[in-house]
Length: 539
Image (cartoon, rainbow, N blue to C red; front, side):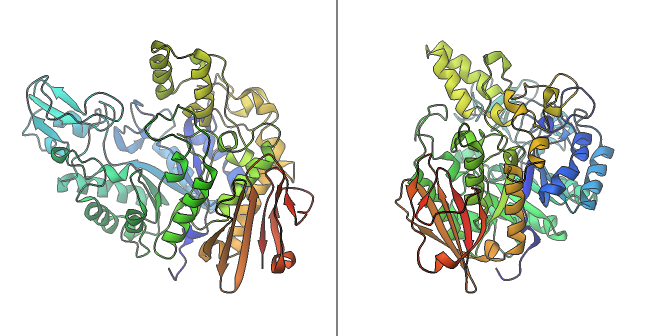
């Protein structure tokens, strides 16, 4: 990977628009609210914003059910607002990355409304249909949201295929007309100045229901290469393929440096480690720390010079990392900075999820009625019916529920944390008076200022982008340490992942190394690491 691409030393900030900033008092974040906060993002130093879906949608699945790819949902504003956001962000050297859902559309999309009128309608073949009789499914495939993956349409005497909600019929990528529609739509957004795309569940577009194949279908990489050739390669974009089924070899295809597919891959192996195999995510299990180190090291080493990874701890579907693997009580700031240090010291493009740069924490609502996430509410109902203890269920939600990431952004100590003048669509975390952006911008030792410095270091030191990776102390149960090397330079990243003091000897040449960043005010002793202590040194 000789020539550096602009996105390799960039940092991406993910916005969940509904919870970021409300501009009109309806309690729901919107595009004008994001425009209002661009100066904050510019000060943080990020290069691109990944927007969770804002296209027109019935919101059956939080906007991942798109009814019009070329319009904005009125909940978030208008197409003019979107154009203004792109232009205002550009003035601050920030690119806007859109979240694109190309595996399926909403059943309210005009293509599907046409498709279900008549088998001979040209749009019928935009989706995946099978003849049959009511109650006799084409096969036993299940939807990821529960129930069969087939839905009966009586007037056609056919079933349509849906991997997700019944309101999310799968698009038929085997049909060249579908692919052409998608390419034209992407080119239209590129003309509007969009800086890139995050491709939702892209590894599922080449499904083959006959053979019960959903992800990694036989034509997957053929389709992706055509998509890239017809669209992305006509601009200088950042493109991210979300691929839950990606292993190293597939990731090398997705993120080939020749640009034939995507800029990078978004894979989740490290984030699944505190889930017991064969159990649900709600069955709480401690993090196998040694496994985490080895997993991250594997991705660092195997993709070096032949692929590119996304680096993240948080997103809109995951609990807050400082509550999950840090300590959100006595050592909240220290552990938030420690987790950031480990991640930003690696090769790949770091992603910051809104509020992560403040060390925002999981929320503990008193009652289930305060939760909004459909997955959480369904689980609560199911487990109550099975006789689980209510407090145990709530503890699972406090640890793993998706609403942890979706409470409103904490801007200041005023009512509703400065998010809205109305009633927020979901409650604000009660700790907003202690944890908020206004207070952290005034504190030079805040979590925000630490993230700001990490972002700056990536741009100043090429070793962050190009250095190779060696894991130190692979079996150590407390310390995460690694070395990066590039053209005679060396970088040491060391972190204590626990709330106990641990021995860690800084010896030899590292004693003379320059400290680039350190999460304690007092200098490191050179013989031990305090709780959640972390630093980066350069030789």
